[in-house]
Each structure stands twice: as structure tokens, then as C-alpha cells.
Image (cartoon, rainbow, N blue to C red):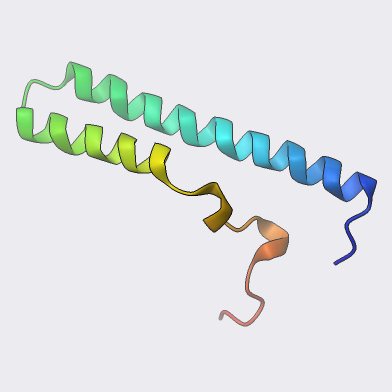
Length: 71
């Protein structure tokens, strides 16, 4: 795939949108963890939020990075 200026702009916008969505999901888990009275569930919710934030963005393929061989 040829990365021209438009492609790079779209990729940048898509990466920013994915990053914002990941943070929104983590924030939702944080809010639910704070409201949860059960310490085990609270811990699990917080662990999921941390896992979302700690995931390496370079290991998250975008649409044009998908392996075309999967079925």
C-alpha cells in the first residue's frame, strides 16, 4: 500500500480516534470500579482498565494492516 499524504492524514486521524475510544473504555471501567462495593469486582474492573491503557498501540492493527489470509 502506498502511503501518500492523504493516507497518512487518515491514518493519523484513525489512530487518534482509536486512542480516544480506548481511553473512554478505560474511564468507564474506572468509574464502574469506583462505584462497585464488591472488592473483588472492583479489582477486576480496575485490572481491565489498566490492561486497556497498558496495551501497546503498535500491536493493534488498523483496517489496512489486517492479515488478509484470515478466514
